[in-house]
Structure formats: C-alpha cells, structure tokens
Image (cartoon, rainbow, N blue to C red; front, side, top):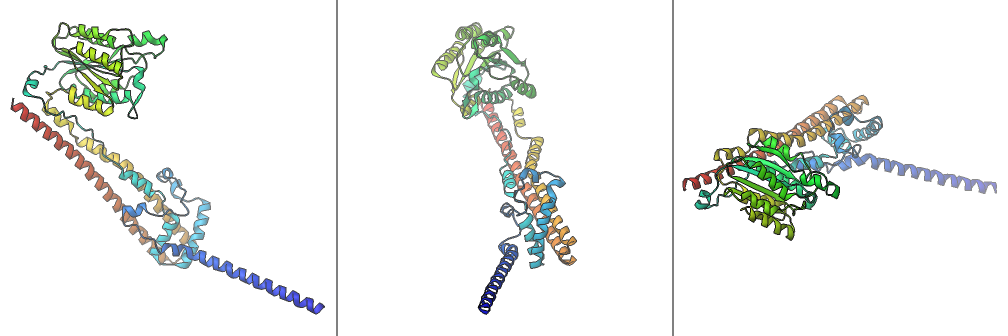
Length: 459
C-alpha cells in the first residue's frame, strides 16, 4: 500500500514537472515570439522618401497618444519622454538591439517606437492651403457708346445701408448683415475711385421692442463722412455697428437729402435693404422730393432677400427717385448685382493696375503658408529629438557598440536631410502656386484694361 501510494505520488510529481516544463516552454515561445515582433513588423516598413510616405507613417507605439498641438510646440516638454516612457523605451530598445544591429533596421525600429502620429493631419492641412488674393472687380465693358456718353459726371455717392433687426436673419448659411457689409465694402472701394462717397446706416440703434422704437427710428448716422475714399477708414466704419432695430427708410432718404442740399454735383443714392418702412414714414414721397428739382439725382435700390410686400414698396421708392430697383435673393446675387449694375463705367484705368496683387500682398501669402508649414518642421525636430534620446539610452545601457551607434546616427541624419528637402520642395510648390495666381490676376486686369482702352478709343 505504501509502495503503491509512493508510486502514485511519484507519477503525480512527474506530471506536474512535465506541466511546468510545458508552461516554461510555452512562456519561452511567447517571449521569443514577442521578441521577434518588432523586427518582424519592420520587414514591411519603408523609409520616408516622399510627402505621401510621411503621411502614411505608422504612429510610434510609445507616442501614439501625443496630441498634435503639443507636438507642434517648440519646447523640451514636447520632445523629451518622461520617466515612465523612458523605462518602456529602454525595454523595447533592449529587445530591438538583441535581434538586430543593422542601422537601417534599427532606424525603422525607432520609427516604430517613436515616430510622429500626426504628420498626416498636419501635412494635409498645409496641402489644403489656397492663396487668398482678392479678386478685382472688373465690370464687363458692355455698354453702348450712347450709354457711355449719357453717363453722369463724377459726383457724390451716398450708400444707405439697412441695419435693422431683420438683417440678422440667415441667407446661404451666412448672416445677411455680414454679406451686405462685405458687398458694400467692395462696392465702396470701387465707386470711391470716381466719386466722393458717404456711408449712412439706419436701424442700428435701440432694439425691435416698442420701447426702443423712437430711438431706433431716429438713430440714423453718417458713419463715413462725405469725402474722398479711404480704404482703412471706410472698412473701419463698417465694423462699428450691428443690426438691431426698426427700418426708418424714409428717414434715411431724408438724411441723404439734408446732406445734399448744398451739393451742385450729381448725387446718387444707393440703398441696400431687406424690408419695408417700419417707422411710419413715407419713403416714396421722400424719394420724390429728393429728385423733384434735380435731374442729376437718383435713388437706386437693391432688395436683398425681400418678400413681395417689401419688393413692391422698394420698387415704388426707386421709381419715385428716378432710379432702378434690383432684386438679390442670395449672397451671390447681391455681389453680382452690385458688380454689374452699380459699378461706374468710367473707371480710372491707371488705378485698375493697382487691383493686381503687389509684391507685399504676394509676400503676405508666402508667410501665411509658412504658418501651416512651420509647425510641421517643429514636429520633425521633436521626432528627431526623441530619436536622439533613444541613441543616448543605447549608449548609456551599452546596448550596441559605438560603430553601430554611429551607423544609426548616420541614417538618422540622412533621413532628416531627406525630409527637410521634402518640406523645402513642398514650400517651393506652394510658392509657385501663389505666384501663378498673382500673375493670372495681373494678366486678367491687364486684359480688361486694354479692352476698356479699345472701347474708349472707339468713341
């Protein structure tokens, strides 16, 4: 019995030993598989040789969570790994250097561990950059000789801009007031070349509540005093108000009439409005009075996204003011209407050349692109600093010989130079794109100017 029991115990012990050995073998196999994992995964890896390859770079496993804003900040905190990450990196470098001492493969290992995860987002943002030169207004020279001959001489232009509360409504996913301000800015810039100009705003005082009606209906202001056009001052005047209250259309025309009482030149009123009179005035009568004794005075109106009732009243006002009414139902139509209907035909041709981008504007676009490119350069430098830190760990831990370290350093330097060249080429591409657009606009202005000269010479 004792003997049998002893044999059973010996057999159990043997089984346990075998199981332990199997577990050890299994653990060793897993460890071996894990140790092989880095280099195995690197077999399909390629060194960066193009901008597309940069975008396709796999995130480094130890920095996969680093945010792009942090990586684009030039400071040691964004480049040097913390203590915990250094411990993980040291373990991974030990695994890597046990399996390979070949510099290029080791460099791929550094990318696998420490490569930036944010190149794709940053590069695509820079690739999406487009130059933003302002397209010059070049009205089509399509008027007949009779129309040109009958054009009134340069005089005074008064822009009446509706800033009532309804201008806060959206059109084409934009606020009406924002669209109108932009259109008036462009219009003022052009018409101001031939005429003294003034900007009068109404409906921007008080609110649409009954308690504020008097304030709103009487709060009509000349924000850009009648005079020669000044770009900075005119743009500033458009930035000083918001849409708020009622629509004193009649009062605004009365304001223009008061301003014009001593003018001997022709006076043209341009109104941009999106609604009817709401201050109990009679804009039709006031427009009639404005032009009654003056053949060279007119009231032109653009109804911006108006309903039928408003359009009917605004048409009556323009008719009474010996002017024209134009409907603009959306943002594009407002711009088109101003461009094709309200721009003066007799524009100073020498001034037109100034509408092409000059050297300073072109340089500003270069700098604007650099604002997209420079953060990528910081990311590249930060990534290289992480590689330097890995090299230092290898040296401190004596993981490889100095000649291997030097070989790895050489690969790092070569790749850094290649990536730097890629970014320089990228900048050159965008610079050329900016230059080509600036040249195209200049050529467009030149062609338009020559056509205008031809028409004038044919008179």
